[in-house]
Image 1 (cartoon, one colour):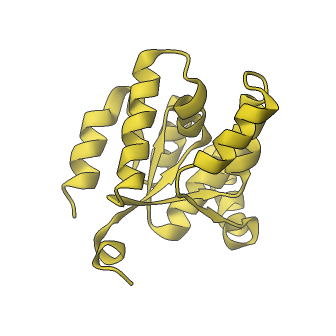
Image 2: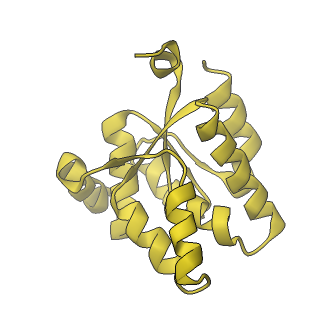
Image 3: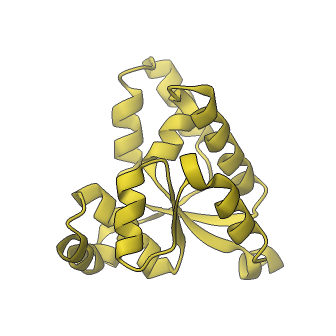
Length: 155
């Protein structure tokens, strides 16, 4: 195990950020996604997500990209450890019950809980529900600099 693996902050990446990496509706969201991808590529963070991430991302990107482009997305996808549902399912149930969050959001929040990670998202409601569940979370559209300071300076 490398020294980086011992010191990197664990983050959970929401599908909204990965979608913005490939098909952002504006430059600001693209910039946020690109910066986060650079953290992952440079091994500054250890990234996690529920396996659902791939289904969500490809489902949305299929509306905008060709099959060939989707294949390129799959090849260039950031290094994210995909966590199977059975690992966090019970936690997701608890989170859904306690926060009233959407099902997919409960999955991401539960993964953050299980891996003791910080949830990063461009979905304000998801961020609010994560905080309600006691999970450190950042709505990067408004909290990118705060997230950057807290995540990257804690190493």
